[in-house]
Image (spheres, rainbow, N blue to C red):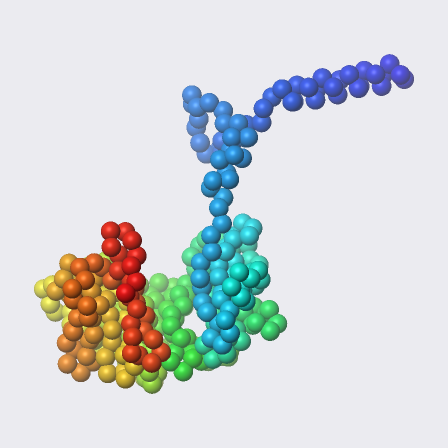
Length: 316
């Protein structure tokens, strides 16, 4: 018996010694054919991983009432929504899904819930959800099958416009819903193809500014009646020049829209389009850089915009 135990102990020592002598390596996946490539030590991969597994955070939204912000950041395998309640404060994780959640917007009238979009398995068939701040409950707002892309909140703050392929599976239609009551969800305007995006609601919520993008160089603006769903062209299609439009916002008085466009220019400029005359008036015409984005103060008196100056974002 003692001889057998001694033999087993010696065998274990030999196996352990041989294992320690063989450095662990990274095995390539079966889908790759590796020929003449030296083995990669696991220790090297672990060292290099520290430079690739960095963490970043992006601002998703501000709480409309309190000095709190919603951010998206990763503390496990995927980015999720977190709440930060004070400058330098600890983050509080809100969503816990195996799939990433990188966007979310507070209900403008009180911040009592958040609307966010999420797909499953990277399939990009996004669904809209409501996260209730008091209970932490998550409610599916869309059908769970179609592709849905969130749009802007109404000026009144209780409706959201969004695009959905629910009707045909391929055409992106314009839908409207009160997220607090999913039964209000309804199709507003049937559209053909993709490339459609709601940009803004008029101050009285009677119209939605709709973008139709055919290519990076060609797009058009429409006005949609929120009662009838009828859409009216704001920019003409029968011009020889192909014009591109980017972002768009209604003016405070609802008589015009501010847009970014390359009309009569090689770069996207900030312009005001009168809804009656449909003429373009350019703001800050001396800037010779693309205007990437802009926003308007709630009183409608100031605009902040971002220009891309040799790859550097400059705020004016």
